[in-house]
Length: 257
Length: 291
Image (cartoon, rainbow over all chains, first blue to last red; front, side):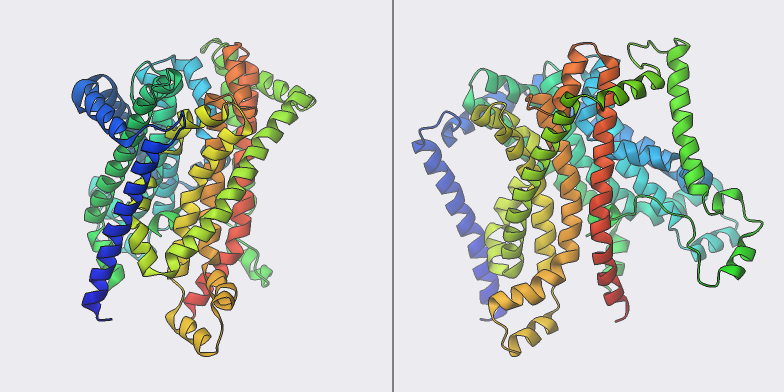
């Protein structure tokens, strides 16, 4: 098989099998006698009616806001504290057990605590997302600084690059692959916490929407919400991937060479 | 691999290892700052924990924060100790571990099988890529309502969510591991007349094992997170449910004690799976390093 034919076969399989799977799910959903399945056209219709754009402002926008705020705070705190810990061995040793404990605590166990401390609503969601998501970023930033190439350190020192210049031009670019890897881990955690904190600690948002739909047996609504979360997860991951590729262009090309 | 590499960090950096030529090492170390000496990691780590406990005790006793929000650390530890003697506590721990183990077991078996299938053939990979790419980012907790409808508060709803959450890291890592098998080794095995099942057993799985181990470690943490989530939200029996009930009942000390317990479980699982992964990875990297 020539390389050309092979490519066509692969593309054909990709489109063909995916179409078959969609058709299969569609047919099954129309025929199934089950109280948890709704026909695909109904789900699509509910999706259009609710999220494009009748309840966009009341449910989708608050979720996006909570997600973005929590994640950005986690990034700032994680990178900031991570840089600090990376520079001081004493601080690092002092905090190691506590950080690994907080990192290993299953995130949602802290949710009832956050509700006690802050109460129900957007600040609680933002807090829990930021609190849980900062650990992977912090740990990766610290490791990045610790593992900095000694030659790089020496070079920077002998060229007299200090302060903000050193941070901006040398340290941050050098550790960016690790930091971005930490952020990637945090993204899925942030989505999880967003959904759960809306299910049990908010009166709006996509998580709340799905939960309410299930409680009232609005099955098509429930599936529409699940599909929306899938689409959001896909978009967020794709967008992050694009940012990552752009920032690490030098790094990836270097590895490929 | 970028992400999983970063996740493969050792939990703590131990002090410098004493080399066989210990004498000269000791001399070299004299005069170093305290933090670089052996035992400093343990001493400072303990000090850090004590400081946090002291702080929590202080802000609560001094009424800077209401004891209803953050009770004194000593009362939390006391509550935890008294819980250790109750059967209710241990049955909650058992229920959490049961859901975790069953879910992770199913996800491991299914995930490796699916990952090996995807990794072995570019055609299968192409055919299923769009479906996998769409399903993977769906947060497992989005399926909580579905799980409630089908299983209610039975073990099934928790196990289902754990499987969905833990499956993908194992699938992706297995797929990656299998597709990384050395071409020369593959051709060699084929020309020596190894059949498909022998190649799988003696070549593909051993080569992919370090990757699968990394996937398992990530999945083991995810499984615990999702399991506890199910307990908090759905009300399956377990520590998560205990935490939610303690919060609803205003028993703040019990809530903190149970949260501490989930943290201990999380650390124990992390250490267990890291210990299992490290020798496998060491074999792998040293192998690559010599070439």
